[in-house]
Image 1 (cartoon, rainbow, N blue to C red):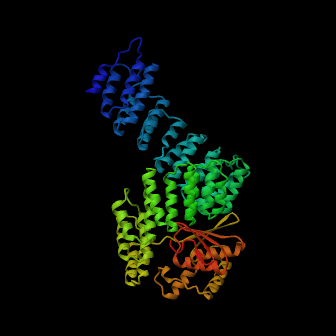
Image 2 (image 1 turned 135 degrees about the vertical axis):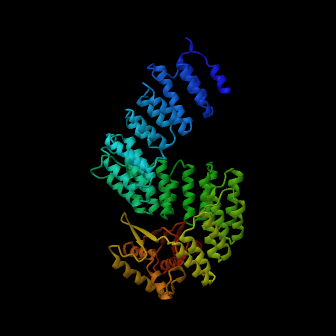
Length: 602
């Protein structure tokens, strides 16, 4: 009734109020009204001549375009398409290409937009390159992107850089890196944005090594463009993921040479790269030489110190940040809480958690609670941590929190709680082979071999396969990958000979393989043989062959380091007098002089 009365009171066209101004006023008021009033508005505009399907006046055309866009944006999909189809099929009322593009932009559901496109094309309105670009929304399905890609090729629209890069983003979101590369190669002109989108696509699809190769392609003779500051940021992120220190420094040298070295975002990425490669001193140097530090700069430095086991230094940096009048955000608190967690600073961790909630009024997220659970696990407060997760957390626990607690159960041999944690992972449908491995190790830690056998049998019945361990080493700008029992490396003969030599020296010094780390059903001798050629050990042997004595050995592991490899690397660092920096899935391990920075808790 309210809207009907508003229509009744709507001013009639007068010399002082043109039809277009009346329509504009009605459409402006209708934008905030429920969808059911649109049929009334539609009828009113048609009856009063403000929305004449066959009219050629500019006022009617403007009103029609505005109304159709509003209908597409505000009505439910089925009703919106009905209204739009009415105007498409009315005699002499085919909207212009610009009007069609406005309608497509307003339609929020990609399938509806594609149906409207097919309808308008069937009636003779082909559209243009902007038409296709509008359809490439973030939620566009991969199948739709491929269809639009074919249209772009057949209609000659790939010269439009905006359209082509939008298509590439859709391929990236859909996980089709090869499709993105194929489209990239088809582009007649590739600007820097297109190169950066392809790098982003590779990063998103974990093809980090391919992303690094694009840097050399961009700098090649056949390339018409050069990397810009965004390229440098993306490549530094790639080096961060791979632990590719040498390549990262090559990118940084390029950034400085081309005038990007002073840009804050580039420097922040460099701080993160150095930190994630275990070069804390270099990260600190870049941080200290950055004149205007943002909250991102401070957070990157605090998180880097935390990941490398320098908890007290991270806390000192946090306190210096507060003295500098830079307000911490949720990521800063994630960094300082993880610093307390990795370094076992229980009281400090709770103090910062309270500060975050009470002093800065920041709402803890699942990452903050994960740090607190890890902190409580380190302190042996496992039942209290379980109570926190099940009864006190303000957010729903994710699989990572349960795995953190399960890892603490393994270390402390808390079998009953470990079984309860596994049940929660099953409820989330998030259980993985690694979760059962943690439970299996928990049973093994207390000598319950019957339960160990039961878990192994259950894993076989479920068809659960452990993720293959992979360790990477960078040498001369090239990333070398190793898996257990690897026989693909060009220097495999030298590597195995060197590893056998290392094993011989370590056994003389007292190293005994920890057979509980080997989960296959083998006898004791078979387990020892299987442990001998884990990926970390092959990577260490290779590094010993190619790395000078004065340089640290840097490894990156896709999984948590197993107990045996941890013991092996500790002893290796002492016998061979080498610093070994290992980045596993959760943290850094700095092995030196027979000790590890994690204090054997990881």
